[in-house]
Image 1 (cartoon, rainbow, N blue to C red):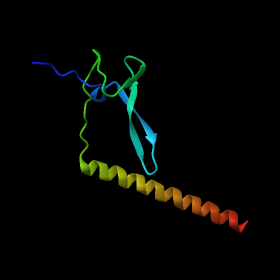
Image 2 (cartoon, rainbow, N blue to C red):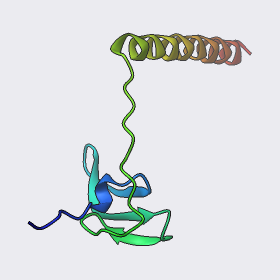
Image 3 (cartoon, rainbow, N blue to C red):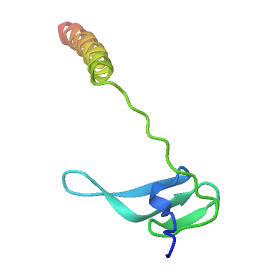
Amino acid sequence: MKLKTPLCMKCEHYDCYYTKGTKRFNKAECGWCTKQRKDVKSRDSCNKFELKKRTFVPRCVVKNYISDILTELTELRLILEAEKSENEEV
C-alpha cells in the first residue's frame, strides 16, 4: 500500500500567493514556505510538513466583531462628514 505524501497546501508553514482578478483575488498554484524559505508549488511536499491547525470561531462571536467594526466605521463617517461641513462653511 502506497502512503500519501502530505501536500504543501495543507501545511502550517505554507502561505499561498494570490493574483488580483476582476472582482476577487484568485489563488495561485504556488506560495511561500516559511520553513524552507523559498517558493514552492502547492502540490509539493517535504519532510518539514505540519498540518494546519483549524480554529473554530462561533458565528455569534463573528457577528459581534462585525457589529463593532460597523459601529466604528459609522462613527468615522460622522466625524469626516462633520469636518467636511466645517470646511465648507469657512
